[in-house]
Image (cartoon, rainbow, N blue to C red):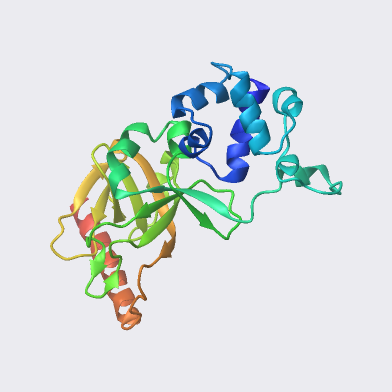
Length: 254
């Protein structure tokens, strides 16, 4: 990757611009910009001048210096510690999976460029973990007036495959399988999960560990409405009883 490619990628990161948004600013194709960033192609001088002028960066610096975050933010004054150059943004940028992007996500979730171009949600937290947001689009995880409804958003922390056997039952997870992306409560069952919806009438799904592309444990939720908190204690007790019943049934089957 050339210094020019590194610098424009860093500019995009600092300015929270996707490849598509950045490319449109300078009448470029997204693929062309990707080639610049990866060092597979060099830009025309007219493009370099446009980018340098737009961001008020000297052309020489853009081409021959690896720009720092402080320089791009026009940091004034010398930082007391060198590690301030890598100081994270106040808000965590979280890639978000929308309904329209389910199939594309299943196919391209391992590609960095694809993840970078996903819509983003900005959270006022400092968290080094890999996070993923998901927009609810159905009623499968709702119960009466409680639970998750369309346009609610959940955010999860990535779970590594080696952690699967140790995951607690009844917790919420975002599951990426070969066929779909969906929210469920998981229950352990001999190297596979039983995935349960909260809504009555939705069939359980059994899925082996090996058939899961990604698993994200839900840590945050943002509601499109004010959730009804009544009867919370009763529902928690019922959830506990359900989990205990499942453990009993599993032990009897074994």
